Length: 283
Image 1 (tube, one colour):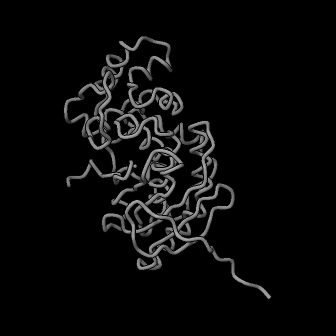
Image 2 (cartoon, rainbow, N blue to C red):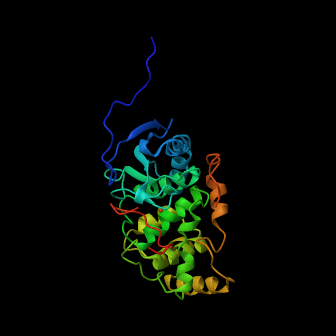
Image 3 (tube, one colour):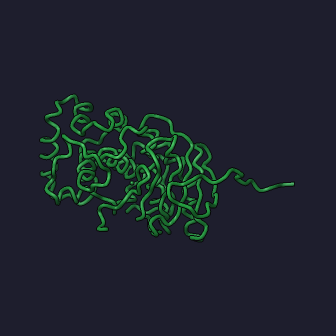
């Protein structure tokens, strides 16, 4: 006599979601357990099913970026911030797998690629091991990971244009002590596009590290050269309209991603008990 396979353990305690957690399934190899708010109906259920199908690809790409293995995580898809188009962002508690492995992502009806990208934004922070929590460099890195792994499905989260409009202030020689400032995050996004940074090097530098130190670490050039060379390259661009003004992410993505995103995805990141906001949009 056959019986359906059911998940018998209690649903996780999410950072903010308090509704019903309907278990969808667990990815085959990387143990990503996906839940959905059932009150959102079939579109959210489809987001959940697509994430189960895509989670192994996301995790494997994330592991390749950081050079370290991930650990099992739980994800709930719901109307974060009341949104169902992905613009509610994503959330988890801490930048590690011990206390930050219960991840919330906003539903994105009809575009599950955005759900996968939001998942990667939070998963990448878990892989930072608390070394870059709550600062502009860590926020930029998580968004870089989401853009590369999520094939830029969160293009509307872009912050580099805001940095350019503000006159390109220097957040290369100093790190902003917040992950909620679109200007400092935007500087980081443009810098990572220019340098095409390697994540482990940023993690090793930690919260107090600067992008100038990252430049020196990766190029063996002096830290004092980083800002001048980057600013010169940025000003040489005709304009900055997205988070990859130097066009390096597509190359990084081709190197990392061998499996296509869900067929519903269309090519178009949160922290420590705070929602990944949309600083590119006016609140």
